[in-house]
Length: 451
Image (cartoon, rainbow, N blue to C red; front, side):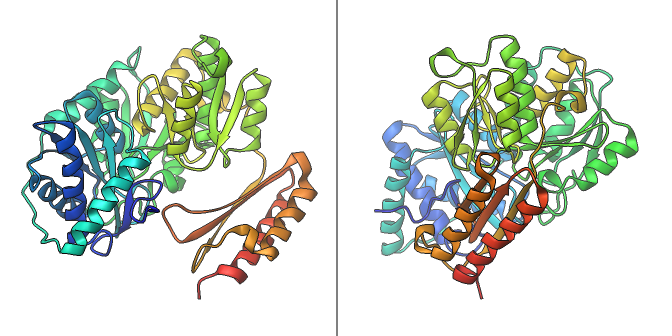
């Protein structure tokens, strides 16, 4: 049976509506509880939330569903997605649940589930859960919440782990920290200050509805202005659940995941810590990473493997090939030595460590990345049909590929979390990039566009 609930990043939707209505959420908890009972005689699951107003009731419904199968819950409160992954792996939890819709608006929410390994559930477990969930819903589920009391010690274990990965203090370093009014709002300023940095906080006052609202990793304009205003050495912005990070240099240059991958790869390679297939240095990135990254890595003698978009696919390829570094242009970066998933706070510490070790700023460290003009266009669609069934679209794609040759790339894909077709065109000339992106997007709009 094809999966119908789980997408590329768990279950996601509008809070209060299917599949995040109380009954279905409760059934998800019950189904997870059934799996947990098979793994332990006395199972316990850790639950965390971001700052959305719907997070607490969804967490209580998941816990209620778990309880109906005799599974206990520990509540981490507002924390990060990578924090839940870490806690699940390092404590005696059979699973971890993070209630978050990452970079989406506050009305959306989601349920991400991690196994004890710290990795997201494999497809087989998600299929098993879906069968159980649909069976429960067919027979009728009476939602039942249970109260949850936050255990502050859980976050302390997570931040202590992050601190342990840093080889030197951050004394005197001035950092602007934009938490996007999300999961990192309390954790990030405390972490950097405890390590000796001078922190200028930005968007660290969540109210349940302002998460990602014109701030955070998807909106770095305010961060850039504050870095320039305060003369900070750098700025960092996190998304809603803090599994990604974007950076701003002292001069105001925006450094995304591609820039982080380049500077981290060069640093790891220098110390012979960048492993890959057959011992050869390699970085795992996605089809969205800029051609400039691939060429900069090649100049250093480092290979690059591309995967479909999604940190899940990056991680799978890293595990398959033995790579220790991978990530996405959007700021998800996985340092497999320290984490099982993308972690914005960990990424920030690694970037700062490279800056200190190299005695250089982000401007110097990212200078070798020559970014090719890239245009991303999102087209809202009524439905999804294979691209090869849309001749007008494939004709435009082929025309662009013929025009660019090896000097450009075209990626057209459907979003895994939203009703969108995403068109990415990259090439040496910005005018032609914009032209082909508009032509391809227009063809999709005519074929599949929403009314």
